[in-house]
Length: 135
Image 1 (cartoon, one colour):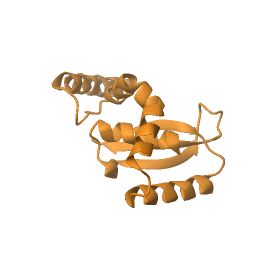
Image 2 (cartoon, helix red, strand yellow):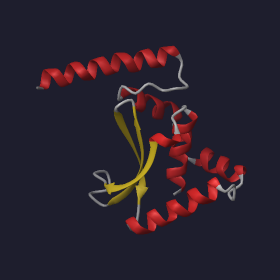
Image 3 (cartoon, helix red, strand yellow):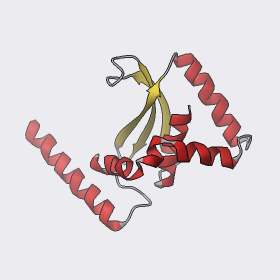
């Protein structure tokens, strides 16, 4: 759940709304078909999935997600603990690559500079052109 929280915080720091973020359990190609936890961003008619790691069971993950999110909303987890989770996260350590991966999907980052969003717009046009050519 720490990896999920690190990813969630990364999306939020880029300006994405919490209503656009979801916890999902899916089979992971990277994990050889085993179950993995994903932090999913759904925005601007697109989806970006951040794999957060392997899990033991869907039910355990759902229960932990509910418990942790309720604790955060109730203010039961100190901000310094949330900051520590954020700073230890892979998303924090590789924040530029994280943002670039999102932009490469043609998603505009709310808190980005105009240059980054122009790159996202151009990438979106490129993806649309590739899709038309493959049909």
